[in-house]
Amino acid sequence: MQIKIENKLNFNENYPIFLSENFLKTESNEYGWIIGYLDDEVEVILPFIIYKKIIFRLLRFTNAPYFLHQDMKKKYEQYFIDNIIHKTKELNVDLIMQPTTNVVFDKVPKSSIYAPFGTYKIDLTLDENILWKNLHAKHRNVIRNAEKKGINIIENNYNINEIYTLISNTFKRSSMDFMTKEKFEKQIENFGKNVKVFIARTENGEMQGCAIIPFSNYGGYYLHGGSIKKPLTGAMNYMQWKIILSLKNSAVCEYDFVGARVDVDKGTKLEGIQKFKERFGSTLYKGYMWKYPIRPFKAKLFDFFYKILKKSEGDIIDQEKARLK
Image (tube, rainbow, N blue to C red; front, top):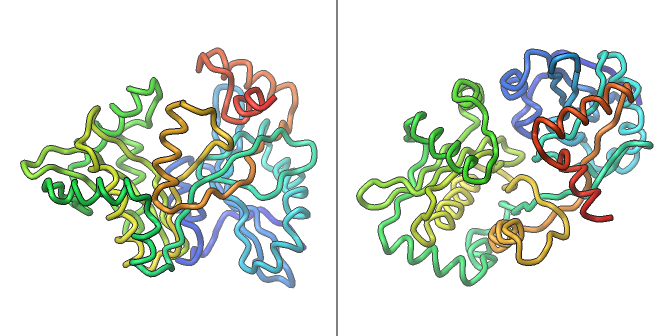
């Protein structure tokens, strides 16, 4: 396999949306794709963005390696993963940082720093009746109740200020930062026809929650979402069910709830969130997150500043490694 760094990609609707230039250019002015070729034909694609933070150049992957053929994935995946480390050195970066939370790798490079990570996915090729039966009984009950109480799920009819405020306030309640309004608007604009925006409202128009779902034929992703502090029981469940149906009707193959810790602690808020996802009949897909210090000293310096500025135990990889010791 020949591995090259490319600055152009002819996006195909059968690719994951996070491979698209429309997404990458929202995240950074510097981006590209590490591509593996077999007999001069594209076989695997790995998109990346590069951030400049003070004195650091940081590379982040926005999707796991996408193989065009599953038999080639089995044969070449470890080779490709091990050899991308060498290729990234051509990009003059200091650290391959934790990927975005939609990314779950099946393999990790030798000598990388990694931790288990996963995501919940639903197979949308199943019949609608089967999808409904796969929902937990409690989910089905509250969805019916929300529908009876007049909750309306509205698709692609929204006020950008309203949904941004709702999502950013949701993040604030968890003491987390959200992107700027300008970036949020640009991201939705760049997705173009490849994004669905859902809003749950009461009969009198009071917004309960919203969701931003970028998609391609390959899959749809619960990228951003928010709710009021105490939404009507079942409103969020009903919205997710309508998302599932809308994606299925658009011939999307799977729905990804985006990101899940593996073996979460019992009784925690995180366990509740993951049970919510699981009860939609989703399957936990397990893999890894990883990072790699290209320049060890600068990578350690970046980690040091990150922990001070974020007042945290580090990124998800650091947290999971510490928790699972």
